[in-house]
Amino acid sequence: MEKLIITAALTGAEVTREQQPALPITPEEIGAAAQACAAAGASIVHVHARNPDGSPTQDKSVYAQIIAAVRTRCDVIVQVSTGGAVGMTPQERLAPVTLLPEMATLSMGSVNFGGDVFLNHPADMEVFARTMREHGVKPEIEVFDSGMLTTANRWLKSGLLTGPLHFDFVLGIPGGMAGTPEALMYLRSQLPVGSTWTVAGMGAAQLPLATLAIVLGGHVRVGFEDNVYYRKGELASSNAQLVSRIARISAELDRPVASAAEARKLLGIR
Ligand code: KMH
Ligand code: ZN
Image (tube, rainbow, N blue to C red; front, side, top):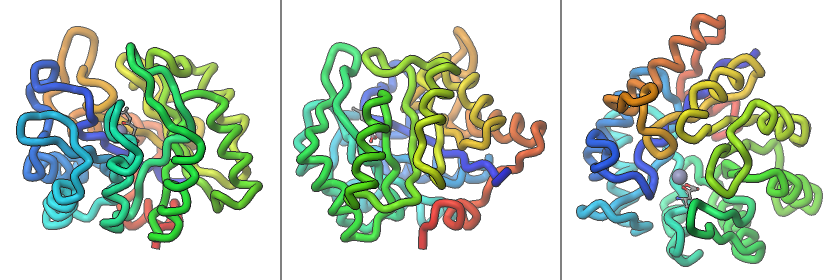
């Protein structure tokens, strides 16, 4: 089995300091969190930008500061969000891709998102996919429900996406696919041949799905974007604490974690 790629989703767009006092918000805080996560075994950081007041932004200059803050501290793959926050325009969301990050997320369809709708019109997503290809940015295909994987398979056949693809199964969003082993097993069964995949379980689904992915040969995403708890009723002290636990479990299961250089090779990133 290939080494385990751990992605740390450090901040997200929705979590607040009230919910998680250790949430990194400024570029410097995000850089420091990335460094701690890299030391704990993460090889990718999935980043969202925030304004100083904590509200989400897709401002390219803030992303540039985040990328610089990470780069000066550690060698980890920086994956920018093009999901941003619900309600942002596609143009706003796509802005950080022009900074030429190594990776960016590519949501493969629309989904109810708690009380909101995370809208991903196919025509906009086609533009996202083309822009990433033109800029040489590796997409991580975000799958919130099974139809999105069907779409990815279709786009692969039509040439809009070029394989091998890397997927993130985002499971347990209220409105999306459930955070259950059955859901993960089904999605895995529908993957295009040669794909790599990771799983981001929301809340209490994070640890069991991560453990299952380690056993199945997938990869793992953890972090405050998806889950602020270490265990029921106990907040995590840092993103790195969540990464360390996955690295420990993986080591026990004889699956060492990948360095950033190894992750680049596994994902075909130049
Ligand atoms: N904040 C969510 C609405 C991504 O980063 O690509 C979308 C999201 C996905 O977080
Ligand atoms: Zn995100």
